[in-house]
Figure: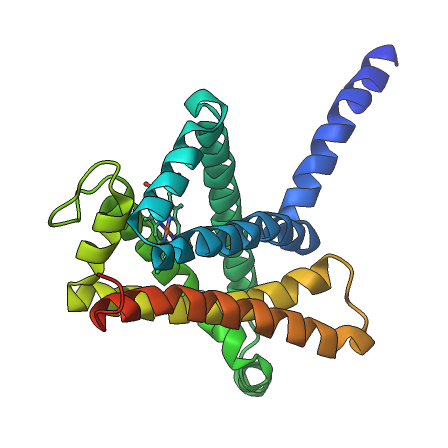
Length: 234
Ligand code: HEM
């Protein structure tokens, strides 16, 4: 008897965690909580990037400050947290998508459901992978420099201006920011619903918040390659 009691006590919390991560609600919660981290990151990152308009000293000084926070240790804590958030976000999205495909009804109901799913929610399925490709390219382009024609370590301003002077690079960034805008619109909307703002009376508020965040981020980020191509930042 004692042996059984111990087994149950040890197994219960473990199976509760497994049940949470295995459930649709649990996976949506993982998406929402990691989504909060990622949204805060893109807002902060955009505000930092806009310092390009203040000139080379401002942007380079800001980038150096971030790199040296906590004697250079904090940036790695931050990178580890962000990597974990992205990994969990992608895992939960994949699990939810595969789950919904497995449960997909056929025939008339299937067509009805497809029509009912919004344009934005369908764009999440191609927008998410496109953003993942963008992030990998972006890190090789502006952080490590392997995908940059004239990368200079520590000269972030030069790397941004020289990088965006190539029209197709700017084109890819602009496309990725449009995908990010759509992703943020639907993502923030769902995130607020999952985190409790779920009553129908909040629908309008959720739409306004999601639209505002998506527009501000997309316009702010897109303005940078456009300003470089237009010769406004050089
Ligand atoms: C036009 C838009 C963007 C510009 C101009 C830009 C610029 C930059 C620059 C210059 C760096 C290197 C900073 C340094 O080495 O100190 C960087 C790093 C990074 N960017 Fe962006 N970025 C943009 C959009 C984005 C977006 C949309 C995301 C994510 C969805 C993103 C994610 C990252 C990440 C994860 C890093 C690495 C941060 C680290 O050092 O750990 N960026 N970005």
